[in-house]
Amino acid sequence: MKAKRRWTAWLWCLVAAITGVAVAGSATLVGAYTKLSGNIKHISVDDKDLGNRPAKVSKAINILMVGSDTRAGANKKYGHQDLGERTDTIILAHLSPNRDNALLISFPRDSLVQLPACPAKNGLMGQKAHVGMINESFNFGGITCTWRTIEGLTGIHIDHFVKVDFTGFKSMVNALGGVEICVPKPINDVKAMLHLPAGRQVVKGEQALGYVRVRYSIGDGSDIGRIQRQQMFLASMIKKAMSGATLTDPAKLFGFLDAATKSVTTDPALNVGVMKDLALSAKGMAAGNIHFVTTPWRYSLTQPGRVEWVQPQAKQLFQLVATDTKIKGSGIKTGKQAKVPRAKVEVVVQNGTNRGGLGRQVATALEQRGYTVVKVGDAKKKPQAKTTIRYSSAGETRVPTLAGDLLKSQNLLVTGTTTPRLVLTIGDDWKGIKPAPVSEEELKSIDATQDSCSTT
Image (cartoon, rainbow, N blue to C red; front, side, top):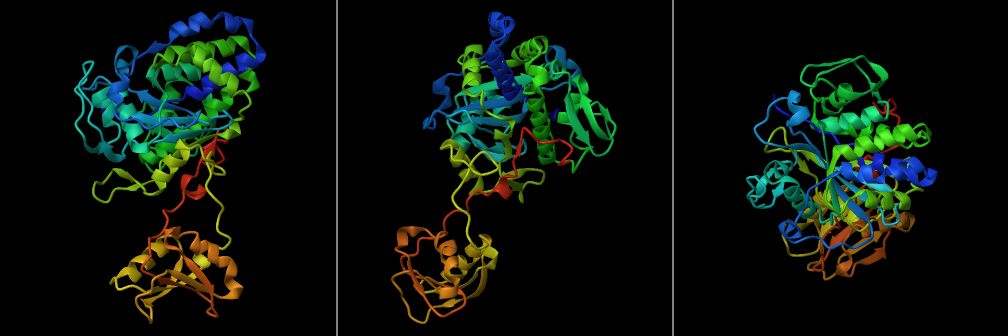
């Protein structure tokens, strides 16, 4: 059976649960510290194997989360695989410096990206540098190679990693008494071992595992659709873990902590003590401040069934996370929105240089940014030293919209005119248009308060 599975849902549930311990001061759980510490398995990641790493620029904590589909031990019943371990889940969890918000970025399994070279080590065959699917790094180089891959692609410094497998995932869900989901239509999927009626319901064990890995028999059958369902499941799981029913019940809380710590493998530095410190510093965080987003993507035009990251949006998202810049509704933010929608701004483009075709190139770039270009031509006088924008006095509020989208190193000159439209005349100092900022619409995040039935 071909393995196509993705699941990880422990970190914020665990942090939320430990937060409850800190707040409640449960003597029972404090006394169980040694047991919980002994539950966690560790794998060392050698810093020299990570190559040239991004600098750590703030007190934010970034944790790489992967779901392992190993078929060893209790996982044998999920089928045979040639490779010892694979992952279809790669998520980067970003905890802000003040621990008042968190953003979890999902990387689509089918993403075509530039993969780094990773040496053969610990029984793994290693990886040559090439363009391939993002999850190949885990298949051939393990967690160290995946860590190196994500740092290289995003420029975000990773502090820790967490790995969870099939059986561990089920144990955590069961310890919570199940997680609520909403199914729009009945599901009958043999591969996922899943049979569910339509409607709102609570799932445990095999049903929960089947739901987060089902793909072809629900929604549009895409991996992207599966990511969205998994984000909703994780949001519902976090909400359950942070609820009073869990935090105020010592037996249930310890059962969840016990299951969670038994389910994970981390780097040695991410131990129960560090988790507790994180939880204590994040105890004021509300579920609504935990957001989930997917890396901006589009279907590949050259390799059907694969996806490519949309640029510059993906790069900007990573940069905003690396610098911990907020965006409303998504856990990060950019600058002010334009006063006038770009689609309502009419622009005349005039080429004031001797560079043939530049006017059309600029017009195309402006249209891609959402402007309405009504005319493209040459300026009456050539060459012109400076780029200018002319506008009517009545349309003055439109000027920052266009001027703000142009690179400012060209000594931009803005003047008034009687024309009812913006006239952009390109001068010899033309430097180009700024990359498009990441927008809320492109990120379309959900938070941990989301009702799973409200967006299905």
